[in-house]
Amino acid sequence: MRTHVDHVDGNALAGVLAEFMSADASTLTVTCRHCGLHGDLAEVVVERDDVGSIVRCHGCERTLLVILRDAGGGIRLRFEGAAEIASA
Image 1 (tube, rainbow, N blue to C red):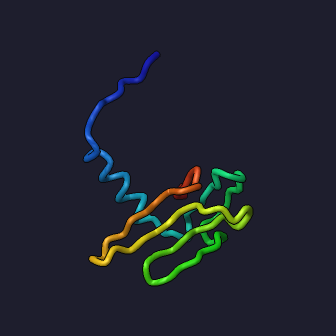
Image 2: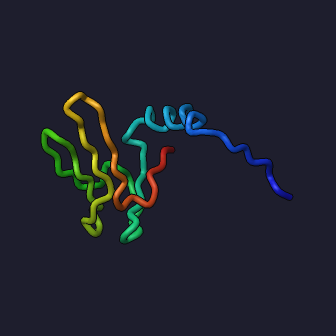
């Protein structure tokens, strides 16, 4: 039996993304696409400066995520090697 699928634009993501982004970061888990290690976000290695942060897997040290802050205050996320980031 096939489930009904709606085709809508990206505005439909606003609610679920707002819910995800408002989650307490200490409750997030991340899975490395490279080595498969799965664990709490608190366990990753972070290199940071005034421009942004490079988030690395504590198992294989590959880049999971890059967080950049624009001059105007905006934030950009580049999902490099994170296979999944999940909230509780």
